[in-house]
Image: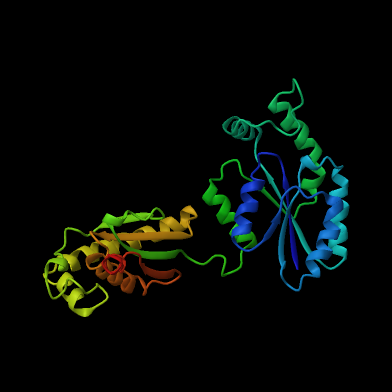
Length: 294
């Protein structure tokens, strides 16, 4: 079992860090007093592997003397638990700006006390905790994506550092654009099989429709440019910290052209490494169901 204690200065990024760690499989608990950590560790140890990776957030909100946390840290290590501590901090101007943006009060900001004075008090109060930390991370100049990257490097497993999960989604504009879409491509400019009697009642999952849509070279040229653009974007999305990407391809009804192009894009992306890939045809059966209901 692994326990990671996340501590540091208010406004240093503890909540964001906890959120990122939760995304990669840590069970996170915010504002857990030090006096409860040993009992909680015992509970986790008895859970038959359900809580193998735990992150506990501790800060001045607990109101405890900081030496209680230091003693608890030593007790956990002595008991055989793989226990480490991350201390997050930032320079005073950065913390002040963050509090201005959120319009929240600093936990130590008593009546009449400025944010700067509260930060100064907290920095002195938390110094012993910082001295016992295994990792100290200054977030002053870190973007959200950079913070995530730092945490992945420190605490992520190889699977946590895996690439983007991509969903290729076909849809019909008349049924609405999928709200989860990151990239939306309109293929209504392509020849429409709907107006060909022998193709109208078939779908883009069938060869005869695919041959019609892909014939003439327009669809192939579009797919080449689309594929090149998506492959260009992928490493930049990963660097930015994105882990889910929904590529939506739309035609009028979501049955012929969008299904064909989505299938083709999915097939071409399947050769890319370090990505998860799935495909969904949201509206492919909607017109058929409406006719049956009618």
